[in-house]
Length: 252
Image 1 (cartoon, one colour):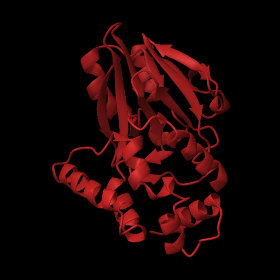
Image 2 (cartoon, one colour):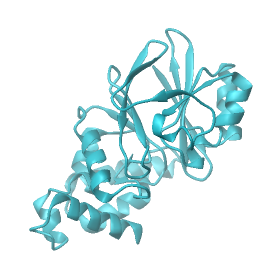
Image 3 (tube, rainbow, N blue to C red):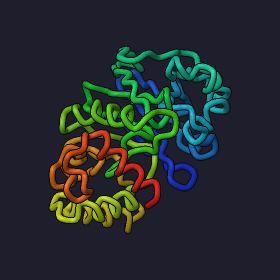
């Protein structure tokens, strides 16, 4: 499995997935036709388009790519009226294949009601769209904070070595937020050096790993006693801590 990162727009990431055994070429969340076509054209084909959710900066290239390459669009069945041109409707916990690559559909509502992740369990890789970012998570637009936390918990329970490819380069802002409310986190401080080094060289910070995020991502640590004390929420439920953090981040 080969993955190629495509920077799009101001901070989006789309991804080429190449199954080298069968020469099956797919793309995850094509933000724009122009940005993605520059990379897709090298392969001279595009078999599948995979969408994590319906927002235009994740499906903007769908129609033109499908038209040019006769690609099949795969997306959640609940978004069939919001993502144009879907050919293959996906269901939660369903197993699908692109070439010889198997992946599981994981429904992770919160950012949108029909947000899904693509989990390639044999390769320990997940595409999380706008649900999990490095050191952050997506805004809650269509779901509830409880839903979003439940979705994040689904992802955090994956094996530690799972690589998570996310939808936006928000890592620097996320880092600053985490450092403000979790200033004594040694793992976070160590991660900051790697992040700053990559960004200084204009390199992407995607992917991250589940193991790294469990140590450093404040939104995955809502049960942490030190964090609860910092927020004056010692006796609060995890979803209350998450709601407070998300509200603080929205205003950050």
